[in-house]
Image 1 (tube, rainbow, N blue to C red):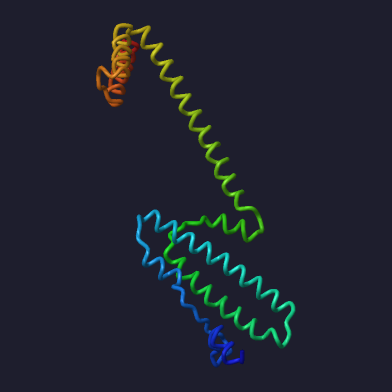
Image 2 (image 1 turned 90 degrees about the vertical axis):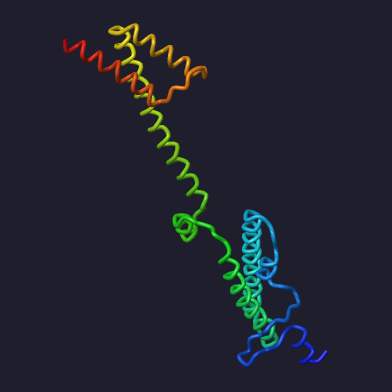
Length: 201
């Protein structure tokens, strides 16, 4: 096979020495445009295409590293071909990335730049959520304790009203009466007001 046939099979070489690859396969962008499905499936397909493009780019970079490490005169053509493939694949990756709407926290990117495991970000977020959950639980328990203490005081001063209040709550919990939380709060405030008035007298 002469050089002209070899160039025709691999692609044409432009005036700047960059090889223009020939391919009969449709690009991932074109195939994605022709694909139909739900938005979730389309988003997943776009993400998979980006991942495949990244893997392909890493493979080309590895091939470039091997070619440059053992470079000689005969390696010029493979080097130009792989550089051109890298440019084409980076352009393809950029076009595919425009179709993916993925939010990546800057903290994750900073961890990767520092050579750390990005899972540390997930661990820190979980620890922060656990800490805030404990604080919220403590406040909830404090309000429950205050409510129980107030009910005890009200029961001593107004036993009949507190008993009626508890009956309404029990009936509401059983689904017999539909009493909103606003109604519960109103009854509780009324009992508290009556207790304050009795103390004032």
